[in-house]
Image (cartoon, rainbow, N blue to C red; front, side, top):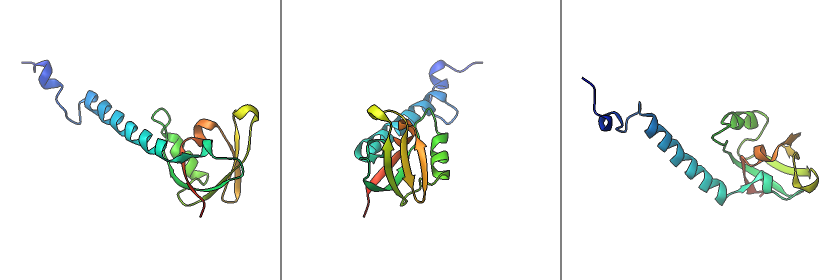
Length: 116
């Protein structure tokens, strides 16, 4: 005996549609947070900031771990030292005592607070 389609689509952890809806709601909340905060890709060249958080996009969740591994952790000082011509990629970023080249998409994952 098979279950009716409506019974099969109830909200449960095994329901892929519910999982997708939950993920979309989470991404909307993350997007609102990111819109309210300043991101590294929009930081002025030469202005000092501190890292508030790292939020990776849904299509590349591994970016958060990579950025944290190279030093983008909350409270760390960060500075954009240079940009490619015409606002393109990459950005040259100093975090702590290290300097890295980041793509704008990666830099957009780093939320900032003004430096104290």
